Image (cartoon, rainbow over all chains, first blue to last red; front, side, top):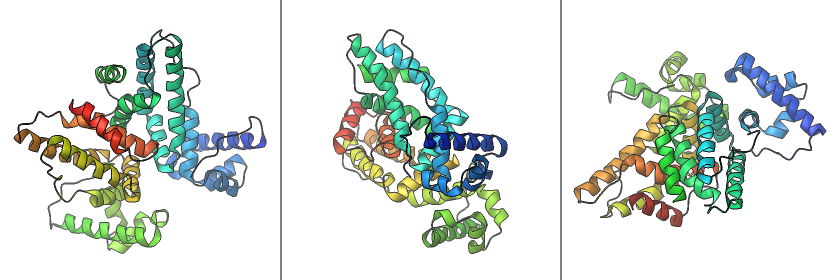
Amino acid sequence: MAIKTSLRPGGRSARVQDSVHQATRALLAELGRDAISLPLIASRAGVTPSTLYRRWGDLSSLLADVSLARMHPDADPVDTGSLRGDLLTWSEQYFDEINSVPGRAMLRDAVASDCTNRCLTILLGQLQTILERAASRGEATPSAEHLVDRVIAPGVFRILFGEGAPGEHEVNAWMDQALG
Amino acid sequence: MAIKTSLRPGGRSARVQDSVHQATRALLAELGRDAISLPLIASRAGVTPSTLYRRWGDLSSLLADVSLARMHPDADPVDTGSLRGDLLTWSEQYFDEINSVPGRAMLRDAVASDCTNRCLTILLGQLQTILERAASRGEATPSAEHLVDRVIAPGVFRILFGEGAPGEHEVNAWMDQALG
């Protein structure tokens, strides 16, 4: 189920989304994810269940949307003065975040709901910011997709299927190869 | 929820598992995954619901177990005469399989149930077979983990979060880098 993201800020649609997100976060905290349902969230948010079915399709998609909103970075990546430094600082924080309990829940919801393009869009946007800054310093830059293949994908794979976040030594080696 | 895998073939435990897997596959085909539940599966399999809760913990874990059993390779990787050939043939088939509808369902169930170590064990076992064959031919071999980081992880990441299975050209380039 694709999630519609183009909301006019402050419009009716954005107000419904705020109210539904808030109700979902409150019910998750009070009852846990196994006990909540779309009708329960609708009732808490003061909207009809059909509003939720129309907009989010199913519970997984709504949960993924709420998790993604929570994980959405609220600042530009830190500027350390070099591409390598920016990428290492940013990726360490990224792996930490998605290896956390809410981060893993976000990945699980994203995979379950097939709304995974939005994750990738946020990720590529962050990398693009770092790459444009490096280009403006005159540094040579790989593509964001290359960084995803060489650094982000192996880290996320370990978090999903292996022993958790990759160590600093490994991320350094992956980065050297990606930038070399 | 960890899934217990050490079953004595033909024992009581293995017979319960066969019956439960068969009931789950039949109900998935008849009703679809949104309409099935542990009590329904228990009733079809002729066991008590508490047997299922005790052994699998929840529906996601049981579905992941059934998907994994279906995806379990029933033959050794093809022997093409060289490490590079074996890996390319095997990885093409692997990406095809997990990019299919049942393959994606398996990934989704595996991520949802946290029973992800079993996926990785099957995967590493297949790679190990290929690597041991190459070593016996006298070829230099990387570790299975290195192949996961450099080739498998970026492919699975694309299938989960991007535009589907990677193209032949990309897999070739990843393989060159992993073996180079």
